[in-house]
Image (cartoon, rainbow, N blue to C red; front, side, top):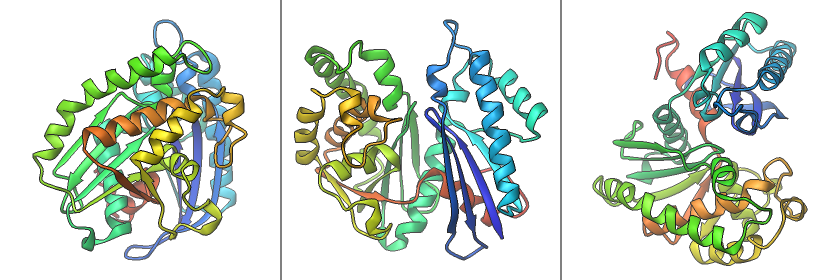
Length: 312
């Protein structure tokens, strides 16, 4: 069957269309992105602004039209931290439903961690053993570890690249003092979480997913996207340390000129790199493997597993 999954994130709204059936490898048929930066369209009281809601409604309408044109039998729409954390989330969901007919499901942080873990497990298989999965989004950082398809421990913390950029940096590029203080703060915050992860046992395989980690890996020498999803890509702590020393002195406009860096995310690259480095250090990991499957694939796989529509 042909399925569409609509991911409403902090930066972009992404429609992924795949051909898949239960027990088969989902094959991408189409991928469309719209840059909305919803997390930056909040009012002083924390509500998503009227302008932000209008932009979201328009984008969802266009995505629904595209999914229909591409022959999708089902469109699964979900939102993460940008919508989840806004003060008027109920109003936002009602507007989207009433004006587009699309039921936008808000995932909890733990849902994100679990579904991303499922995707990584399916990609790597049982031979990966005890698996530790990391994912840096615009609004949050997810960690999950386990030996089965459901993690034994899953955690979401508000250390997303976009969120930290807005909350901790006041200039572009950030000052040296802001970079150092943010790194130290992240180390303090992640230490107790790393202890809880360690209690689950030593992971046999540690992977990272999603755009921030892929970009960091590419900037430290990993294969480009043109090499295909099965090319092995890694991110090392020494490479990341050198990269941070380089990119922390560059403006967002200059970062956008680097190969593999999208203009819509360049402004939050430094914060994302600091989160990645702090997480690796807290977990005492010198290397992460990049997994091409993440949250969207997890949503699709769960849909295929549960034809009766049960929630994860």
